[in-house]
Image (tube, protein in one colour):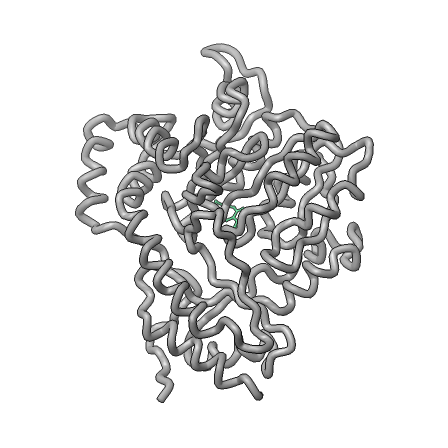
Length: 372
Ligand SMILES: *Cc1c(COP(=O)(O)O)cnc(C)c1O
């Protein structure tokens, strides 16, 4: 009954616009011979994204990681940054590469974002900022985090790599805290091959972000900052402009697939799905499932799918504070919920062109192991 696939089904598959549309976009680049360094497409994508993302201020970058690294530099932070270990390498690396010290806060058990109730216990006189992650597109408790930040005079920067196009009560996801980083990597809901953006509150950051992504150059003969090369090129911006036209369709398709997964897997003893927040306009970026006291454990489900040439992903696993490069620097027992969820979670295949029959097959494989 259950078939195997000739080509592997991966956890995600990059969306691509019709080839002719992208090729058509390349003509003006050939005509102008302007390939990078803030060209016309760069400006156009920036304007269109501001509208789409309901963001007041936005700057584009070559990728999400550079966006975050240069944002932290632009904010001139010093000391400790409270963040979570249940994230992608980028979040913590950006902190450390800026000479800042990450302080790991645990996540909550409901949507795997930072446990806001634990933040205050980690604040010291060296704390300068909070850097939470909107994990899987689940928006953090932004109101509570805002209160804490105001009370202690801290900056708030969101890793919003998973939250493209989302809203909370109709407000763009990039409007919370002082700034947010978005990733437009090929595997994300919206992409520009590689790419990223920073949305931010303080217009004084505009020049600084622009300069830092361009080597810290501030004038024809002046370089005021030790910047980097974080510029998005015209080929990336053209891909972004093409893809943006399809975003509504892409998200609608992801929504349908997600609904099927939820329909088939919710209420099954030992399987936990994220709670939905009715205030959030979701982008359906990921389909995480937690196996907690289920017939088979996470790794067994992963292997069972793999036998059918279907590759779910242990995401995020391992937690950042147990990476080799950070080993012995942090007490992983201080973040037990993150540790546990990392060992129990699997994100299931989800992308716009995924066949509904594969969703059903994945669910069949999982439900077959109810009493394994
Ligand atoms: C993808 C991702 C990033 C980094 O984005 P890139 O565009 O790949 O550099 C950072 N944080 C999280 C949580 C991500 O998923």
